[in-house]
Image 1 (cartoon, rainbow over the protein chains, first blue to last red):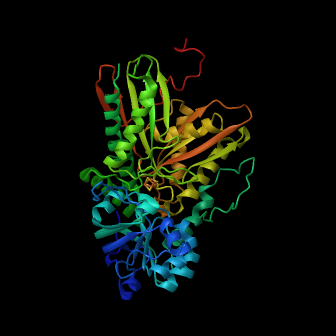
Image 2: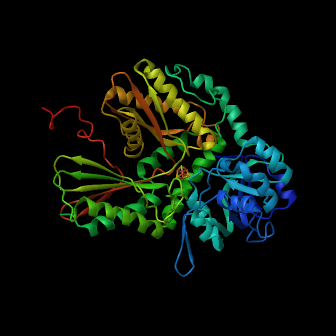
Length: 223
Length: 313
Ligand code: SF4
């Protein structure tokens, strides 16, 4: 059973003190307003120079890397089912410029980003990375969404890439993956696991036919 | 004669069930993993998953916001007849996929690979995939939908006879370690392994081993069954659990399927069926009766036959 983990309720426009208090491995539930933004939104804002359609970070400082399972009915109303994050490492290219443009303090996604991204972009902007759990806890997260406030750029980007603005309450769980110092929970766990890898591989042997590859060091990450 | 209306209505119900209700065999496997897990973060993740399945069922919402890529496996008894024939059947499955995408709702995941065109209904060129199998006797059709998730966790490699079991173990571990970090594979998973065939057949075998066999099922070849057990233990001894945190729940079960291959080779594929191991099955009988279940029961003796003629002499 899970014991000894800290559980925290956090605002989506958090104070500096609240952010500084978060430690890697803490369990977080969010209250307030969040918005989804991923490559479609990033390219539109950063590369195409289109203005943000809402007042950030005043409305929300919480960017969710997500496309919800949702539809918009003919009358404009929404049906929102489950919500699950998408893998964040793919957005590395835009994250620095995006944190500057949006003032986001909470980046919520799947699987974290690289230690370099934390050091070069997150820490200078005072941003924290929260990872979703599982990662299949879409139904639990769906429960935490109380309302769809707005949907921007649906026509331009499609349902999956559009900017959903969602009112949330007790929305979670998430785990603090990177704190205000840029420490990474995944890094810490990888290091612990790496110590056992040689033992796990005992009794196996490399393939007869090699492949061109970027790493043979199993302590490396591939992202 | 099986009517198209009956087929389509059943297919729509299967789409809903697959997205919302985790199959019992996977749930039982995950509960056992949660009970055995002692890493605190890994345990927290598994408990949250168990809570999530309950929430999905109670609220009637998809268990995961990424509702994967819906696909169909159609198996027909040799005497089955469809009103309108196979073309009508395929249209019904495409309609059911599109209708369920807005009704459940599912995420419209399918886009054109280059132009990213999105019909918002999970239907497009080659989507959903529809695969076929046949069985001697019977006037029924088994419809199975699998909503396979995950861009990570699958790999293929050409091995050779001299790689042997040691080489198989190495590639198995490589796949789990590579994609298990940060939990990209959304483990613990049902790991399906395809051995032999040709490159494409090997991928198909591995995927079917992951998606069409239930947790606890064993290959009828006792030596392959023993290898399934051994690989499961090997995967759970890496020291990695859910989300890549320290732990021991990586593999809920390991299923291996084989196909005869070129005498010089030993193709191997690895597939991970994630925390949202979504599948739902129905048998539609010739008289219109419909029976729902979660075990596709795909790999029968007939599917694995080795002989020229059937029945075997
Ligand atoms: S791999 Fe499975 S559990 Fe993970 S996000 Fe995709 S569908 Fe959900």
